[in-house]
Length: 107
Image (cartoon, rainbow, N blue to C red):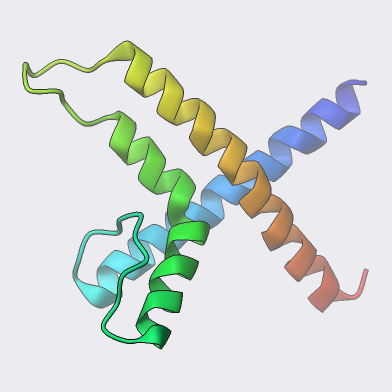
């Protein structure tokens, strides 16, 4: 039972790492903040933003949870909700990243 839990934690960690690297790489290359969006100047731009939102979504959700609500204090419910969503989302991102890695590796 504990080995399955550690495998799940590893998948979440891989997903969060992929999301973090993708988010900061996107911000470094395009010089704009990564946001959850699907708009674009063209159809290809819309697909690019949608792909970025899917892969970088966990890190974006964590950043959204840490934003202040005007009184220079954090909302604990907002932080917990965004963390819950981000870690669940990073499990899906980690599964995708590990499946691509293992299919390239041929294992």
